[in-house]
Length: 107
Image (cartoon, rainbow, N blue to C red; front, side):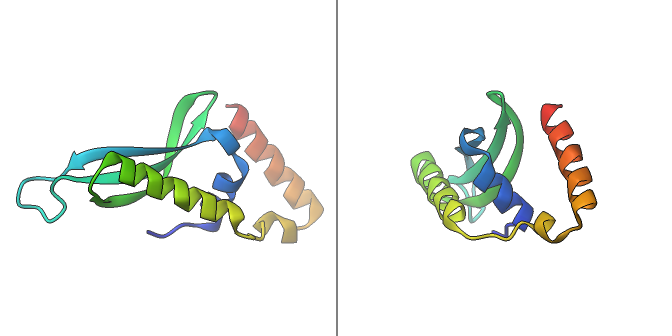
């Protein structure tokens, strides 16, 4: 499971808008992942689902295992020191990007 710097920054900065969830059991009988659960880290806005940030793939035996693993991952990501790529941009570029991002957040 890979994660981009921007996804990590979203997870670090969005507080209660980050939800850990599970989906399953999944996959067809005979499939190696049959009966496994997928862990999800999703972004919500104003209490409504917005979009998924990442998933584990089908690897957990229960929904609780999947959710617990995703919560642990969120906690680990929130402890990481991640350099914000905007910090190295010139002020006017950084300001323009910040305005675009804020406009997108408001919908």
